[in-house]
Length: 95
Image (tube, rainbow, N blue to C red; front, side, top):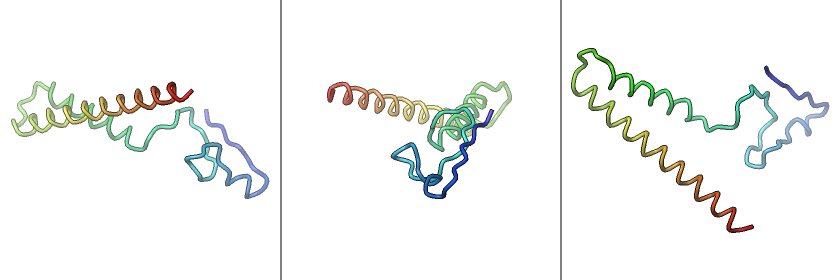
């Protein structure tokens, strides 16, 4: 379900618990903080897999574009994973 925090004064409502997000406090829908492009990326990944796997006689250019899109999204995922691992290693080394 949704949880909403009600603030009595405007200054408290504008304070954010996250230092990087200096906006007003928003209602939580139970999902973690994820970048805005994550749903788009997941949708494109699913669509490209469906185009590649479909038994219909789609034009070769469409299938080839879906394969390249799938490859691009795979590289993007691996770069994000590598960045997260590097950030974790840097935090571990700093402590």
